[in-house]
View (spheres, rainbow, N blue to C red):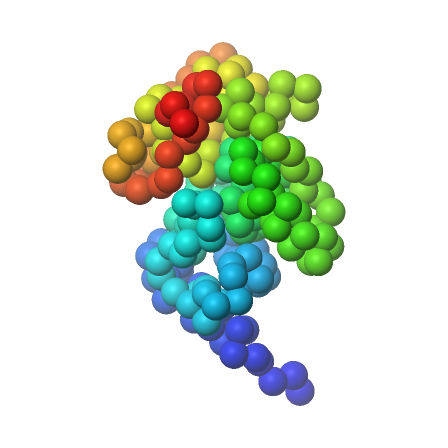
Length: 217
């Protein structure tokens, strides 16, 4: 009989109390949140708080999103397992890791070298080899690998970047926080049969989306 570690207990409590209790119901999302060790994506000093219901600093003025928001955005993509997903804003790498447990391949872009280096080491440590990463301006997307079945932006911008809409497959879903630099609406853009619809699914607060189609640095 395997005795659960304190990490396992805290992770399961996170899933039960923060996710299921607040409406996260997609089995694949819940399984990914149970599988990915969130404590490995934060500094050692922050690890005891890794499964708390709040974001945490990861350096360079950036944060790892609270577990509920990670799960909410993952669930909203409606992934079935075959998809290629583009993530803008690698940060700690946790969101990309969660996505990688569900879809076929994740492409993730980060603008801060030190964050991507650390995230890449964590991906490799966990053998998450279906995550492809690069340093670049994420607001311009990844044209050479487009189209993407899903696009997820983990920073708040003043508008939805046009290059990301263009690089979204049809059908496809794009999630992005849109608003000012203090509070945003989490927007779900859906492209289907050449038509685009946009809905708001949550009010959120993310770090700023910096780039040619975001906020100025």
